[in-house]
Amino acid sequence: MSSRSDTRAEAFRLLPSIEELLHDPRLEPLGRGLAREVWLDFLRELIERWRAEVKAGTLDASALSARLAGTALVDELRLRVERERRAGIVRVVNATGVVLHTGLGRAPVHAEAAAAMGRIAGSYCVLEVDRESGERNQRDDRLSELLRRMTGAEAGIVVNNCAAAAYLLLNTFLKRGQRDEVIVSRGELVEIGGSFRVPDVMERAGVVLREVGTTNRTRLSDYRNAAGERTALLMKVHTSNFRVEGFTEEVTPTELAVLGREIGLPTAFDLGSGLIEGDDVRPLPEVMGDEPRVRDAVASGVDVVCFSGDKLFGGPQSGLIVGKRAAIAALRKNPVYRALRLDKVTIAGLERSLELYLAGRGDEIPARAMLRATADELRPRAEKLAAALGKLPGCRAEVIPERSQPGSGAAPGVFLPTFVVRLTHARLKAAAFAAALRRSEPPAFVRVQDDALLCDPRSLLPGDDELLVESVRSVCAS
Image (cartoon, rainbow, N blue to C red):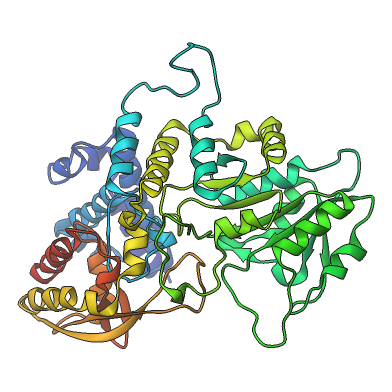
C-alpha cells in the first residue's frame, strides 16, 4: 500500500507547473497568436486532466515521465489548439442531401441577397429614416410592402423567427387582466426543433391553452363550443414535422376565419415552413405534398398568417407575418415587437429575396432550385463527382439511386429521388471517415449508411463539388 502511495506521490511531483509550461520552448509556437488567458486555460486543462489520471491510478510516474519526455505534451496541446481554431460558425460543404438542414444553417440565401447583406453589414444604411423627408419611419416599411405584393395580404411585419412570430401574435391578442385562452386543435400541438413545444410558447406568451377535438379528428363545432368570454384567439397550427393518417378530420383555415368573424374573435394560422407559390412563382414539385401555400392561407380570410423565412422561402432566418391591416398594426404596437424585430442585415437579405421572387426569379433561390432538381438532372453531377473521388488513394466510389429530404420539418415523409455517390475507404471505417471530413478544410458533411458514406449532389452549391473532392483528398493524405 505504501509503495503505491509513494508512486502516486512521485507522479504528482512530476506534473509540471503552469509557469514551466509557459517557458517550454516546444510549446511556444502553439500558443503564438492565442490570447494569453486562453492559452493559460489550455495548459490548466491539460494538467488537470493528467492530475485526474494520476489520482485515479491510471497514470503512474513512469508513464508520466514518458509523456513529458516524448511528444504527448505537444500533441495533446496541438489538438486542443486545432479544435479552438475550428470552433465557431464556418462555411461547410453539405453533401447530406438534406436541403434545409437545421444543423447546417437551413436555407443558403441567393448570392444577390448575401451580397446585399454584406454591403449593409459593413456600412451605414437607410434603416429608420425616410430619404425624401429626413423624418423617422419604420425599419420594415419596405418589407411590409414587398410582403403585401408577394402574398396578397393587406400588410406584413417581420420578426427574428417563426416561434417569435407565434409568441408576438399570442401576446398581442391577450385581453389583459383575464386568464385568456387560445383555442387550438389537440392534433396540432406540435413540438418543433430543439424541444420547443407550442403549448410552452403559449404559456410564456401569457395565454392559457384550450385544447379541442382529438388527436385525429377536430370539427368546427369543437371550436364553437369552446369559445367563451375568456377566449382571445382561434388558432390553427400546421403540423409541419409529422402527419396523422387514416380516420382524420380537421378544420380548414377558411372555416376558422368564418367562425372568427361570426363570433367576433381574431384568427391565426401558423404555417411553420410556409410555401410561397403564386402566379409569378413556378410551383415546386408535387411531391411537396399538402404543405400549405402562403397565398392560400391569406386568401382563407384568417387575420394573421405566419411562416419561416429560412425554410421553403429560402431567405435568412426570420418569422414572416402577413394578414389583415388592423391585426398587423396591433402586432406593431405591442412593446414586445421591439425585442423581436430584425436587424439591418437580415432586413437587407429579405428585401432582396422578395424582390427576386417578384421579378420572376424565384427559381434562382438556392433552396428552391435544389428541391426542384430531378434525379435525371442530378445523375451526371453524381457521376462526375464519383469519377473524381474514385481516383483518390484508398477510395472506391460508385453512383447509386437514393432519396433526398427537404429537411427542417417541411413536408415530412416526402422523399425526393436522387443519385448519390457511395464512397468507401480501404483504411477508414465509415464513421471515422465521416468524422475526419467534418474536421477537414473545408468541413464536409455526408450521410453514413451501411458502412459507407453517401454524398448527395442535391444539396451541393455551385463549386461545392470541387471543395468536397479537396476535403476527401486531405483526409486520404493524412
